[in-house]
Length: 380
Image 1 (cartoon, rainbow, N blue to C red):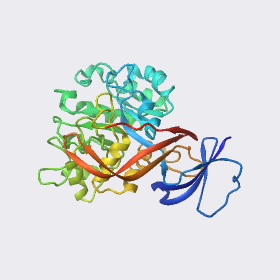
Image 2: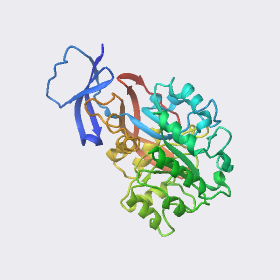
Image 3: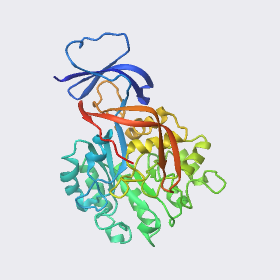
Image 4: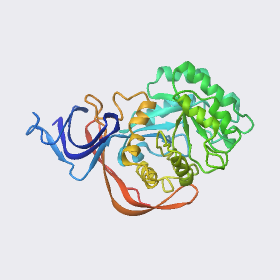
C-alpha cells in the first residue's frame, strides 16, 4: 500500500508556520497534503493509518555537521546509526573527504545509506583521511579540482575549511582565502570551523560571505564570538549583518552552555543546531542530535526555535527549501516523530559543565521517503 495517513499528531513546521494537530497524507514517498482536525479526506478506508496521538511530528531533522567516512577517516562513524536510526533524515559530512577520496566516499557512504548523505568537501585534497592537520601542507590545497567536483556531484553542497591553530599551524588565514575563492567559482557556501587562534576569529569572519556558515560558534575557548564583557565582537556583528550564519557544531570540545546562554541574553539564537558527531564523542558528550537539541532547550529556547534550527534553517543553507525541512505539499516525505515529556536528565557540555533538563525530547520514528523506521535510543 503506497498511501499512508498520519493521524492525531501535533505538527510543528516553522516553514509553514504550523503548530497544532493535522493529519498528514503521504503517497509514493511524497507529502500529498495536510488535513485539519474534523475534516475528512478521500483516502479514508484506502490507506495505511498510523495513529500518532501524544506525538509531535516535524519535517525530517537535518544534521549539518557530522563525520561519516569510517572507511578512510579514523574518526568516521556509520551514517545510518546517527541518521535515520536517530530521527535524522539528512546529514552533511563536514570535510572528512577531499577530492582525492570523494569517489570512495560516494560509493561506500552516499550510495548505500538510507539516510540522505551530503558533503562539505574539504579544501584539502586529502580531507581528514591522512590525519587532522590537513592544512599544514599548502600543496594539498585543491581549489580547481574541488570546484570541478562540486559542479559534477550534486551531493557536494559546499566547501569545508578548518581554521584553528592545530590545523593550519603557520599558514594563517590563507587556506580560508583559497576556500572562499573556490566557493565563489563553484557558487556554493563555505563552512568554516573555528577554535583556538591563530588565526584570530576577526580575521576569519571578515572573509566570509552571505550564506557562509561558522561552525563551533559557541565554544568555550578564548577568542570566541563574545568578548570578556559578554558583548558580541564587532567583526561578528558585521558578519551577521552580511548574512553569515552561526552553527552550533557541538563536538568533543566545541560547545559551552555559558557561551550560548550569554548569546541568548543578547536576544540572539543559533541559526542551525548540529552535532559534529564522530567516533570518540558519540558516547559522550554529544551522543545524538536529539540530545544536542535537549541541551539548547534547557537554555530556554522554545521547541519551535529548536525545530527550526534542524529543519527549515539547514534546508535553506543546502538550498533545498522546496523539498527538505518542510511539510509542504509535494515535498519529500521525510519526517521525524518524537515525544517531549517530563523527565529529569543530566546533560553535560564540552567544558564538563552540567545542567539538569526538566523535559526530554526523544525521537520515536523516522519517516524517510515515506518508509517508517524505528529509532534507537542512545544511552547516557
